[in-house]
Length: 613
Ligand code: M6R
Image 1 (tube, helix red, strand yellow):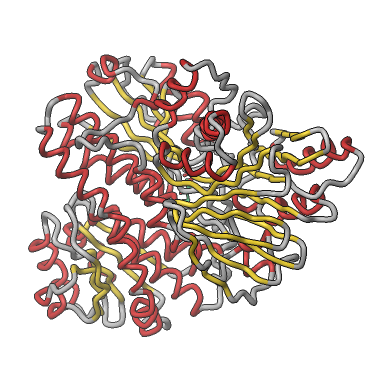
Image 2 (cartoon, rainbow, N blue to C red):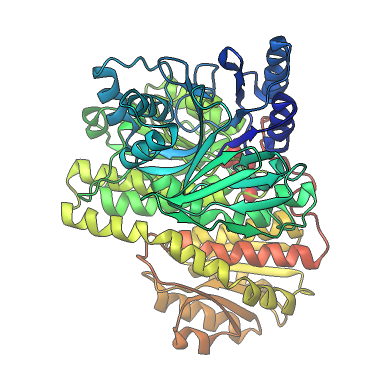
């Protein structure tokens, strides 16, 4: 998830782009860059100085010494290739006459860059984006206009993208295209702008238009022409925007947590992208392990903290069931103090959205000491854990600003499910047809999560009906247990209410003593393996006066009749169910916290990244 901006017809394109990039910084800032249309052709500056990248770009660009009218800019959140100046956008073709900025993922970039290199193109970055500049170069060398060459390039690339391209052959023109990743255009007198997001446009545009999937835009000063990929002109969709800058950064949502929960369908599909072949196989070449090394693995340890630990618990069920590997899961802060038995045939999987959590990092170092194979699942490219591990599987949730993990938690579960299926495929513990069928179900998850998000007002009503309650229990069995733990953690951290997560079968061994009339029990009661046993546990707490709210599958009247209120979710494969079932619990925690008047993005006593022991 990166920020992109473009302008033509500006009195000072550099200043406009820098201001826009600052407004887009919440989309990532590991590096930044701009390309300007100068009298001597395209002039590009880039910097990878972390939080100061945009400032560094401005300082370097000021050396140009005169104002120009058009250019493009980018602030990056790395997905392919570590954060570095070489990987920073804009990317150029071999001649330096074409510059490209991109947000998204080009799925077939490896194939295309091999092909381009074989034809003699010189690719200088590790990114998926650079191929676009070279494909357009080929098109223009064949006599196509910039627009024609972009159109031809789009026929070759697969994946998610918002692209803005300039060429020194047509200095007033910006060409843009969209597939899934957002892109908006702004028009004002004598000027036009493009951006990945509305905040970048707010200051200058008098009219704002949204590009749809499969549309291409040509932008000149004061003029926008939108067409389909086939070349038919279409009427752009106009947007009525009356947001302040802060509201625009949150895309109109009240806070980042709300925005990030609603980004989950996209985050899941980005995390799946390119990791499954059309023939129904899992492809995880990027982990840097070769298959023989992974075949040697006899045991898996998962180490993590907080929500990442809960994602790891789900992985235990998936890895044991599908890959038939024994799995131990540890709270990272305990792992190295209990003398774990590790060796070179052990795979240690560290799960951490930040890749910086000290407890998890130290647990991985302990495993490195014993020569275990280290794999990290993280959302931050080139984070400490990503650098130290032998292999990395990145989640592609984009930056998460709210302290409560939401979209990173869901994408961790997705990455871990992919890992479990990959190991099963490698070890032959699942038939190819079984893997293919599971892939189909994985691909259906973004839509199912979207359905749950569309039920938000119903969840809010349930939250408001229990807003005066102070004690909550969350219970589940099998994969419903980690969901219960995560539901309880979300509620604790943002609403400061007492919430305990328990395996439902354990209640009778002690905690049931706390159940009394007025206690709310939230039960994860979707149709996973131990549903009937869970129903017996629900009966036990109801008999003691608890009010029960169940997460249940659409249309499951039997569950609905046994409880007081229902949070409905679509059904999926039981081992994928946590990805769907946890979403109403995020919404429940969110609306309870709001009902109590709390700032959900900045809960008390917590930090987004915990780098102390
Ligand atoms: O960056 P990490 O995933 O390693 O962070 C681990 C925990 O600190 C984190 O999940 C924390 O529990 C969240 N605030 C949960 O919402």
